[in-house]
Figure (cartoon, rainbow, N blue to C red):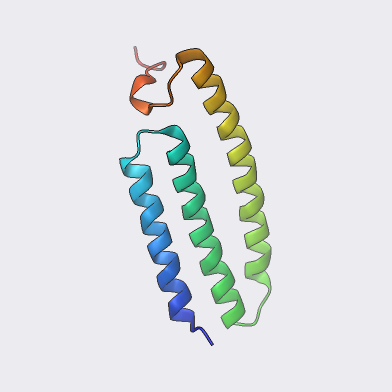
Length: 100
């Protein structure tokens, strides 16, 4: 049987990879994938602790987080497509629309 600490260690590693991806990446698609990886790491932690304590509250929160992640992915992808059509690039450094 896999212990709780193993799940937490995997979640920490996944969250760290996602954080590094968000901080380093200049590609919008990679950025959104890194955010999704961080959300999945949080989901893994919620499920692990929920199962360890024999309560179903963590499972409910995971469904909420998955719903928010799906909405974020749909809206984010629509924004990426719109920005790509206007600027023909997905490099974050090229988007200076809000600068004075």
